[in-house]
Image 1: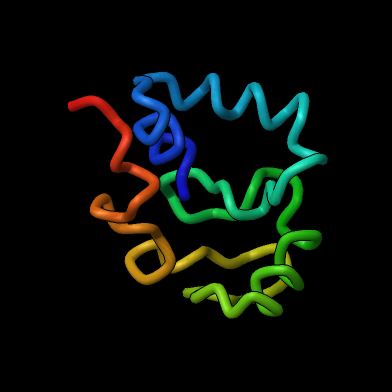
Image 2: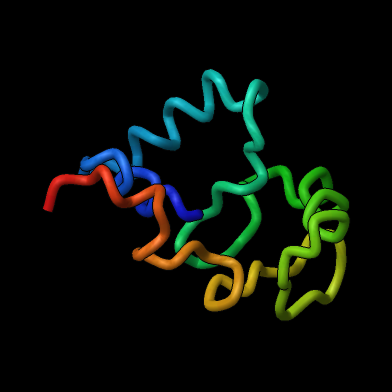
Length: 90
């Protein structure tokens, strides 16, 4: 999911707030699963995230090196009809 996807699932328009929460508490969650809308891995953590993506089978594109790749969001992203969005007010 992107920061914006999580904000949307929470009924918020504040993706930067999601990033702020992850900056403080991200060590306790699967932080590598939250990415910017560009599909780039979390800033400064591409080498730490790559083994996790490979282990989980996360679809990648443009993988040049451990530091230069993107997540294929078109394949990896949860669709907006996923149950996680069912509680969001329109």
